Image (tube, rainbow, N blue to C red; front, side, top):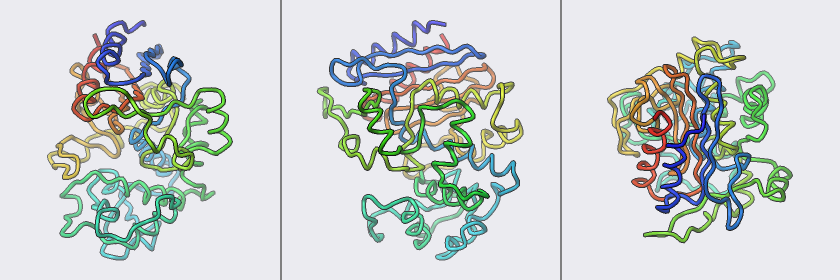
Length: 356
């Protein structure tokens, strides 16, 4: 499996200044292939083992983590959050469930908007969680009937995962031990320890994200990618890191008949079936069908995917999806953020070319 059309699409994006470099990983009915184009930094080709930031493409790990805990009898997706985090139930939030959080219908995004008490920039996740617990939902919010992309909900759910875990592990440690390790995703992490960051930097395997200039290149490294604390910060909503081939392996584990699956088939069906449809996302400005943690049948999977393909994207730079009908798992990590319109042009071109 050589993926010549997908490689050509990535190369066109490189030539057009849509990215500085990109990794593409495809697993089709158990056969894996990788494509890399461009550079990680000037004069340094982007390797398939390079570790890139996934941004919001890390979010589906929450559905998998909670699915594992549900299978072990520790929680249910229908549980009120306050059942596991009593402090969350104040300010009118007692009826918010994990399902609401996963479908972006909980209204917690308001806790970080203008006019709310400000958190210090490097506040640890447990401090962020306490802050969210103290805040109300958005004014006039209709629980489960309105939708707004809701990254604060991931801090809440990470707190639930820790509370429900018999060992009370931090969310990033739970994911490392219960998801990444069993799947052989040894280069992946949520945030990272300082020692690991230093080791990756010294071996030239930590590839930063770049932001395109207002109209065209040159590219410049995102400021947060230069900030060691931000690279290390275990943000459950936006700081997963690893190579494309390992995130593709995660999606392949959710396909029917996958060897040694993490989740039971019924749980996979539960987290990937449409759970929210026909509700406009007031922050992202889209109406995309949503499961318990994944976008379903959307632009991420291109023109040829089956209607039950599911996946997630991240900040104009990454996307991954699985197509159960075709036995296909795909991940593309680009180290350039060209702006939303150009990014979605790139997404459609690459994902469609994978099938052709």
